[in-house]
Length: 145
Image 1 (cartoon, helix red, strand yellow):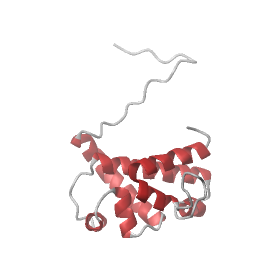
Image 2: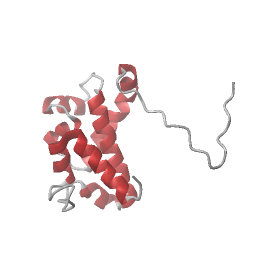
Image 3: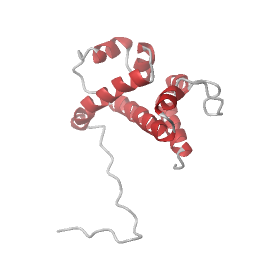
Image 4: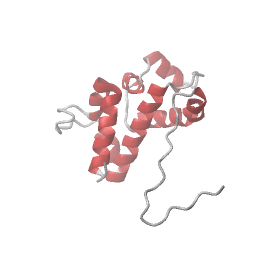
């Protein structure tokens, strides 16, 4: 049975969220997420230790991922972290020129959220919660919440 098209002024259909608890879903997202994380690490000039901590993995695993010698599927935790980083990257590039957008995460920030730390330091110290807070901060700067 066909579904009716939304009428003007009606609420949009709820967004379907990927079920990251399912290994099949994570496997579908795995390669794209790894590729994005590797590129982000280059754009943001992350040291191996920083990249590993942001991803929530050991440095040894990070080196294996970089060398394309890791045949695992990212965890739900890893994909949530990757999603936050990708959202931050995208938001920054909508706000700023490329050089400023890529440097922003390494620059000390006096906003009360960051407390004088760079966003990278803040996200490493605070884990997923800090990563999501940083993403919300960037989204708020763009005018949305």
